[in-house]
Length: 315
Image 1 (cartoon, rainbow, N blue to C red):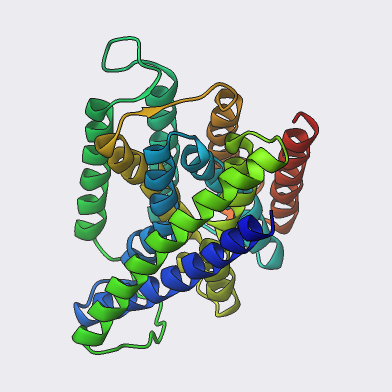
Image 2: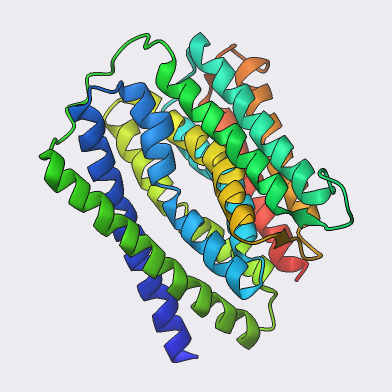
């Protein structure tokens, strides 16, 4: 038990440290190449902070459990309800009109992935993500990413990012990737042992502990960006992370090995869809259009706490 706990927590430390190093290197490269800060927020940072989920998803699939899938679904719900709720609580979030499409893309990505997970979209009777379906999801992610890189930049946010040399930035990215993959392996191994010890399914561990833990980079990035007055990065990071999780990570994982869906995760998949729709409705239709108020932020946080309470009491 003690060894499992040590393995689990050290794995998380390596994950978060590797992710931070990866993000810093990616941002530095982006600035050297003069990529817009909006793309940095929604694509580079959003994807970079989701590397731990990618590592865990691949590792858990190779050993045959749903920790990784649970982490992606649980992480999406945590991002939208807890992180975005906290951001709005500390400072009301104003969503620019040109960001509306990204909110809708977030919903579309979640809905498409959940349909693929719960129904045999490509035919047959396999419940989960086949290699064909994984390829479909990854293709949609690539299309979205190209769209992000080509979209017109409305304005720069003026953030003074620290820029390293191209060589140093590349080393940071390489070491960061290595760190998150090693950390991911350790977290999955520790999660499995903990699940067996407490007689809890790996799916529940993924939805709660792993899902929240691997979203810590998103939480840190969003709150730091908010405190520095850069709400575009705070919100874009969340959207980019969710789109990458449901299209990119599940696509890559499904291509490596077909991903079966174990019983008990279906209801949580629908919660992820519901959370995406609720956030969109609050921003676009409730209260002042294009704004997430403090009261709405509190509502999102309380909704997430209620969701976690429901998971733990129904174990």
